Amino acid sequence: MTSDEPDDRWIWSNDERVAGLPDTPEPVRCEFCGAMRYHKGFKFGDRIIWPPYGAERCTCPQAVKAYEEEKAAKAAEEEEKQKAEAERKMRERISRIVGESGMGDRFLRRTFDTFQITDDNRRAAAAARRYADSFDSLLPRPGAPEPGRNGLFIAGPPGTGKTHLAAAIANHLIAQGRPVVCMTMIDLLERIKRTFSKRDTDEGSVLKIYKTVPLLVIDDIGKEPPTEWAISTVYNIINGRYEAYLPTIVTTNYDTEALIGRMTPRETRDDMTARATIDRLMEMCRAITLTGQSWRQR
Image (cartoon, rainbow, N blue to C red; front, side, top):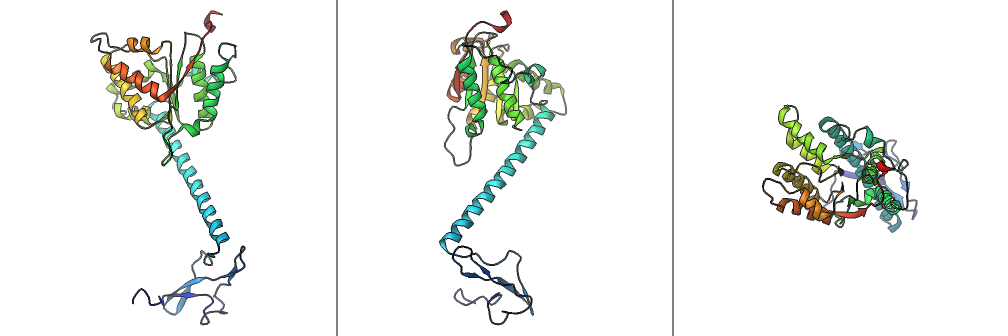
């Protein structure tokens, strides 16, 4: 049979050979142009099988537009389902490998509602709230433009609310079901070290969580002892998130130059990895600076 010859395996419901038979489905009128839409049946021996998907779609412009809109809506719904399932699996992995978001009780109690606004921190608090509210738009999406600076570098003296704001963002997103890891730099490294003596969890599994979780919050970067292993591991995590365009929030008591000094291994005094790490963070993050008197001294 050539491509120009009719395919006699199929038959239309308005064909005189089947029209009016009890099993032949009734035509459907197009809701837009009024044209009749007929069903397409498949010949199977002496029987006609009418597929359950209904009459053929009308080809009028309005019907085509409505179909494309319906198809796009279904695709978006399916994408949301897949995203929700991926987030559920990520939360399970975090809970199993790192612990529930890595957050202790003190972190969990820090929310936007419990943050005390002052003249010194008002702008920083507003910026943190905007960040939390717009988080979905900061995530990388296939085919979308690069998200740019989608992280935060929160710096300031001790006790000015850096950790509280970072934890408030994390808690805001966790309440929405978003997978988040939030912990101090020291705890983050300690979780990796624990794998060295465990058989059920390996270092790679923990690093994968840190590199792929939608939001990683690192509190008090620069407080960790600057060994070569520690600084190399921090760079590995930050660079992995940099390459994947994933949002990262860090808090620190230091400006960038002081932080490079804090992250330079004392045994070698080689600051190359420290500088590379901070360069990555500066490219990934917008800066928020907190000032004022320490809450702990009030």
